Length: 96
View 1 (spheres, rainbow, N blue to C red):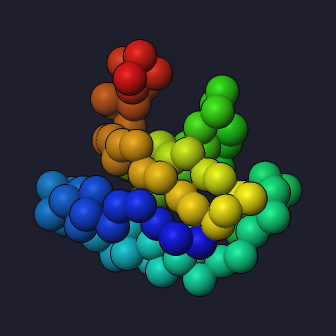
View 2 (cartoon, rainbow, N blue to C red):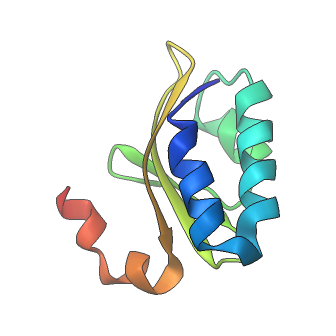
View 3 (cartoon, rainbow, N blue to C red):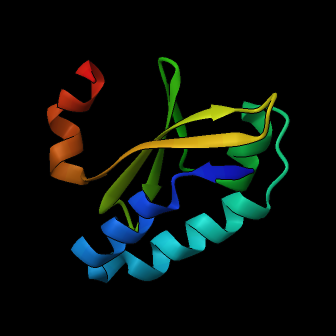
């Protein structure tokens, strides 16, 4: 999958150094993946959930959430936000 944009991952790695390895691993796995649908994504990342038109990945032992739009038909993942769990739980990300 083509990940747009890796910059959001690298910025999150700097802000949340305790999760840097998990973020990097997520990026490497999703980048190499060729996925046709949500079922294949769920097989690859057991903790992913579909929320409306977005996909939410639990990363770093539930410390972070990667919120992304996944377009299986063109092989692209658009990272919308990378949030710590408490900020994600507030739900403000849904308004944007």
